[in-house]
Image 1 (tube, rainbow over the protein chains, first blue to last red):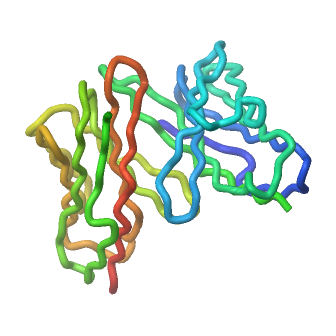
Image 2 (cartoon, helix red, strand yellow):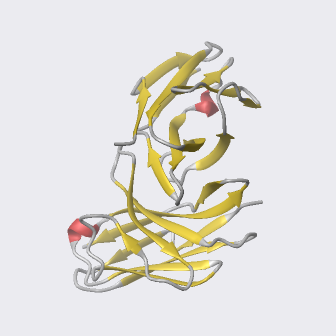
Amino acid sequence: GAVVSQHPSRVICKSGTSVKIECRSLDFQATTMFWYRQFPKQSLMLMATSNEGSKATYEQGVEKDKFLINHASLTLSTLTVTSAHPEDSSFYICSAASRQGYTDTQYFGPGTRLTVL
Amino acid sequence: EDQVTQSPEALRLQEGESSSLNCSYTVSGLRGLFWYRQDPGKGPEFLFTLYSAGEEKEKERLKATLTKKESFLHITAPKPEDSATYLCAVQVGYGQNFVFGPGTRLSVLP
């Protein structure tokens, strides 16, 4: 149980184009999803927290107009990188939170490797 | 400020050589402590949740323990396939606030 999928797993795009990444919780409903960015040999960097039906909460320093997040349902959240540039190249990982008792366990997707040429 | 540190930063073990990874936390209002395993190029894989001091959980060669200030991930007789980065995270406060540690990179040599 608690499977999270992410699509695509790998994407290469030209500078200036937009890229959409989908995150789905396959076997549970997630009221909250998280989007992370990870640089090589570094830990996870939280970009934003997304709740179904409401606007995402972005971490300080993350441009909300650059990284558009939509949480359309309890099983789907999308991250759109708008007008991508080479510095946006990174590994993007989503997670979906499942409430268990009084804690929320995050289950992570497999990640999306974005390369902007 | 809530903080999570992990030590060592990297650990190399021979196959069968047991050891422990440490996760120390300074937080207010701990709701749960999580351990994850992350392989290169993949998302973290959930291992354990610990809720209160004294609690222990086991899975195969892994055993996680929790005190009021730290958690240990004990690896017994590790195998090369246990090589990964192990992440520790805590949930704090009333909302969905999580703090992740920097991770420990474990290499198990055959």
